[in-house]
Length: 242
Ligand SMILES: NC(=O)c1ccc[n+]([C@@H]2O[C@H](COP(=O)([O-])OP(=O)(O)OC[C@H]3O[C@@H](n4cnc5c(N)ncnc54)[C@H](OP(=O)(O)O)[C@@H]3O)[C@@H](O)[C@H]2O)c1
Image (cartoon, rainbow, N blue to C red):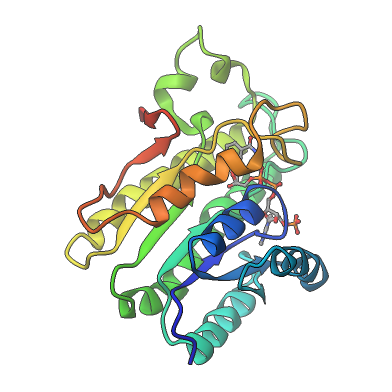
């Protein structure tokens, strides 16, 4: 049995997820690098291991119940418990548009990965989180899920027409609050992390922030002390308005 603290990051083969894995590894965790594609996961694990991280690949397609169940079973067999779950995997589906333009299937696809997948992963790993001494769950969020920011016509957020992404991440915020409430007596802290606009495939390569800067917000919430907050969403500058 591995005696290190263990963290799982979904969608960690690239982007912010890979940097979250790196920073958790630097903080002393054994990091399970979730990737829906085994080959892409292996490439990321190789890079992280070469950088001195205790990284292990794990196949995890968040919309595939068998994959989620299989991953949870393998983590239980190898480690017995899980200290940190980072729900990072997400998509902005092709054709994501405003309310007047979006196709039904596109809206559904965003929710399949960003909400239904996230809840399925959380449910599957919760028994292992309960076995850890002070587990933490971090759900990646965004200012595009903030009603206050999207609702402000002066804000850049009000001009981004990705209903599937925005609405599914707003739903993730509700999952965060409700899970925090449901786990309030367990010592498990649950928060959302807004990494800010980072240069990745999703964020666009001209974004001002690096994936490592975005990752730091999530890592801070994954390593909160026992008296830390639960049930909120944080960006680098502090709590994000709902
Ligand atoms: N970048 C930004 O500016 C920004 C801003 C705010 C919030 N965020 C949030 O930060 C998180 C990471 O974003 P990112 O910019 O790093 O995105 P990214 O570069 O597009 O990476 C997304 C990751 O999620 C994985 N993924 C997608 N669908 C999946 C599925 N069904 N099952 C398992 N893995 C899946 C991808 O795997 P594949 O490589 O196989 O596609 C990839 O590893 C997301 O939750 C995003 O909403 C990002």
